[in-house]
Image (cartoon, rainbow, N blue to C red):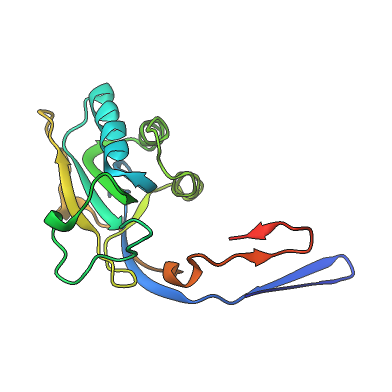
Length: 191
């Protein structure tokens, strides 16, 4: 719910929305470098795979780990005991990816910006904040599920143990907003 009103030359906005607490990891390493992270929304696995493979070859990156975070709209969350066998790579879904390559921030931004299909909101908020953040915990019953590793002969130079910046944050509950359209006075739509 959004409540707005204006008092003289001031506009006041109040927002109420259902949220869920999640745990995420930041890309920033203790030495100031970053690992690479990507977020893709509403794409098929093959779109994500091909975009990351192109970037992996172009920048000579080590393994890239691809995880499914949300299935196609028909099936919002994976069923109980979901396995990779239940996954349909040709259907659209949401994916995240990690690459354990120590990279200066500007180079990391260049690499992620060069990747086709990357989620624009993920990218712009990351640049604004100076680091990438991806969810690692469940959200509305949806835990990220590893689905594929893009193998590479290039060595990884970071391990999970090197990641020291973990964060608890709140995010909107996606299931509440699916298929909701709010009409505005001039025929515009919100959401």
